[in-house]
Image (cartoon, rainbow, N blue to C red; front, side, top):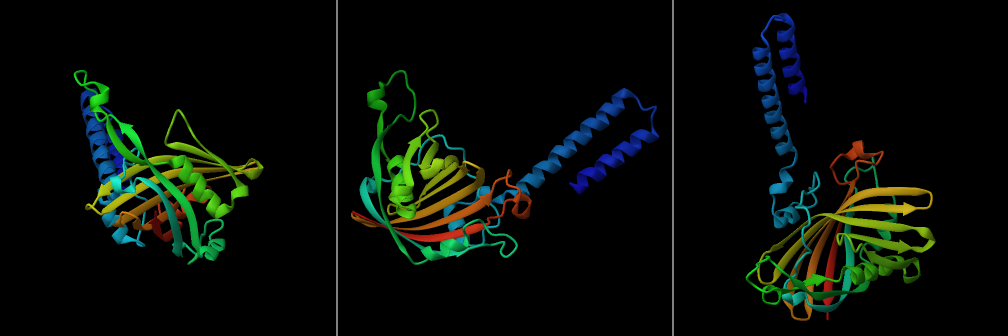
Length: 283
């Protein structure tokens, strides 16, 4: 930004020295300045956001040296899982590590309390179900023929199951998927508390026949009767198929402050909390 200001003041100085310059020349100078400004901003943006070019596997390999949030494509469809995910699974989740990269300067609310979950087994059920998918609209091919059967996560069931496992059945009332926006869901808690989660970025990678990676960035809005808390959450998970009844996974979660947070300028796009879990899915 300093370079842009210097260029601006140099051009302004020249204009002041030559007030008799023709309108045509002045317009040309302004066009050149605008073009140069666009080029500089493009370079700056490219340097600020190198994470966009990384594969998800590279992202995992860089953990915990995550200096900024990942940029994922805007979700246009749900995550599509390999066929070996289909069915109901009993999950054992273990928090192996948590890191506060900006401590002691800054820590997220509740970070210290999460120590009680380290190496503790949390168990819950998840489902992966069949769904219909129409890859392309073709006027010459009937929908029934063009239809594909895919495997997706049962987000309503899974979210409720996970929330109740961590917070208690009595503390989590229900999960509602927005019928007008399937990327948004609302988790209702006791006492008029609710969490509104919206997926704003999503990507998946098939590494091999037995390895699959997913990543989502979610905007979270936690609302209480007298307060609100906003943040962004990145969840990147690598699954490995052991056999038809067992899947093991490594899950990496990063918390980022929302630009609306009063402490945002302490961290900018750096993660303020990192979590590493191991997952075991059994049938």
